[in-house]
Length: 361
Image 1: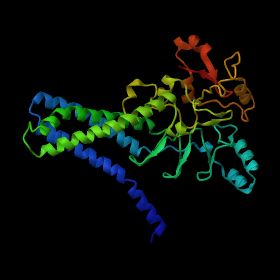
Image 2: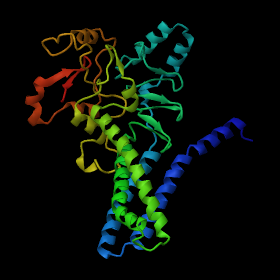
Image 3: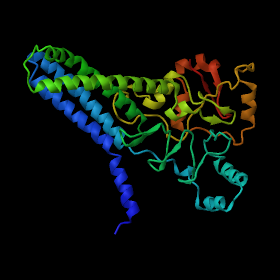
Image 4: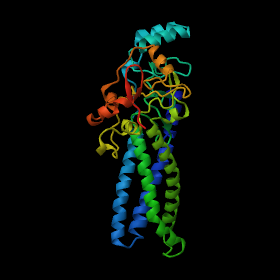
């Protein structure tokens, strides 16, 4: 017999799917209302009917595909090198003093690409998952695991939005917005006709009227949400980082991971333009290491001849860990095309002590 605790957990997990079920029912009803009640039963012009149905089904397929990918793409776990070995776990458990624990974590992290810290300057460590948190990784209490580049936990997809599915989430917002705008625009004239009794009072009247109200209301909310996440992509921030800037050794820096709009976009959507609009994974990197571009911590302080703030330089020189090279997939973000190489060489800013990158405007 299963323990009562496990049954209660299973019940809560079933309840988590209620928002997803609600969205699925709304979408299924909208398909029936638009295709059957509006296009087939109401619109009489054959050409208009064919065009509406063709465009609608393209948007519908892309919307459902991206929504499905956002829901069922499992969050990626940090690589095994970030997990503590059995001996390190025992050593950490035997230490009671925080200073000694931090020394152990520093020793373990010295060869890992970790540059962010807690607000107090300590190594970011997860007591639940027993691992050193990679940069931009956070523990999600709902998923009960550490999520790479965690943005937020979204109840409407019953999943964490992070490195593994952030592109899918962006496409889901984009296609759902286009879907609602298209339905609103094409339904408007028939909504007005029914409202002014210009068409017979049939069963389609309720569906067409409610479809217009629902699509227009969703369009407004989706427009604001999509615009906000477009801004986050351009700034290379997650929702969590927008509310609390990531902390480096020189202090909090809201633009610490920003590489310029173009490279920020490619970090999420990849280099292959043909994949940008498709809900297939094409993001750059492994989710554990990120190139950084540290900006002036004190705008009042004059810059050094190399364009760096002396305080940041000294912070870099006193870095507790030796330089750690980025992985090949991430280093591609730092390499410009050969035609741009000589032009951009003089515009490079300061990263961690291991590398420098271009600061785009």
